Length: 230
Image 1 (tube, rainbow, N blue to C red):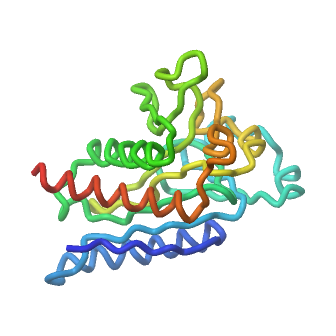
Image 2 (cartoon, helix red, strand yellow; image 1 turned 90 degrees about the vertical axis):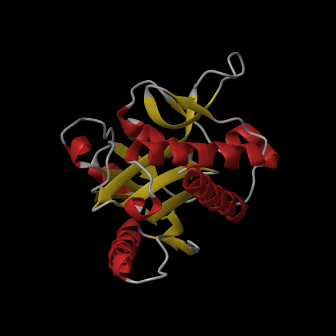
């Protein structure tokens, strides 16, 4: 069964969240429909926004006051995903796979590793080596001195699973304003650097369209490979 990819373009976080929830409803309803797709992959580029999970709202990982954020035209939105606090904005590929893990036969922990592998494969396509950190979800890149050690985060992952259908997903820094990450403690990880494909690749940095297409394609390839291993 084919899983379609839908590019939503650029939009506010709240609008995209409503679309996610509608697709989540459709995927759940599809369990009763023979031949229906077990999910959809949504691609989007958000207007500047800081999203805070329930865990983040109890902490102190928002470093800027709301007046400062308003002056910068950066919204604050509560979110029902896991994780802590993060930033989304122009120049960042956000991928929301809305997938029925029950129909696909994929365990939750395997799904998280699947997303990491897809990001790493997409980065490799453009000549950048991605690294997993056993202590933190997401994808990292190494430093000049230690290229094999996770040094700076280039992609974040945060998901929600309800009735075994996923929401939210991953955010890959292609060419965002990295200064905006200084307004938070990204993902609640103190003292960890954040980077982007532009910072690492310079003029070889891909376009948003090319990077988004690569991410979606590798998510689909990883899903196919996972199903074949069952």
